[in-house]
Image: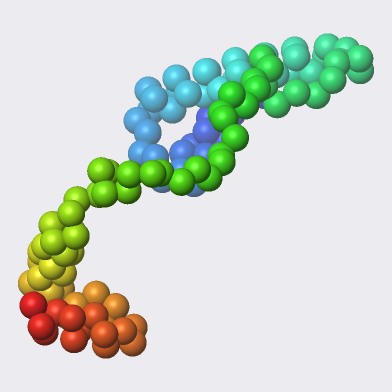
Length: 117
């Protein structure tokens, strides 16, 4: 039988601040839930296979296969546009962070690239 002190202890461990009315309500509700589980434990389930789901679920995703795309330039911006996008990102990064990305990790080539731009 669940007591109010146990609900108070669980609320304390969960860092919940319950009012007296809430604690009483939760005590009653949790007691009902535990009583229901006690009823379920009386069932004979020796012939029931353990399951992880109530219904069968099958994987309907397709196989991940690598296929080359013939027209790469159609899906990527032209090289000059790509370079401008990269430069804008790097300049924004330097403005916000104060240093280029990866320079502190030992990638001085990126820093030289930024200095040329």
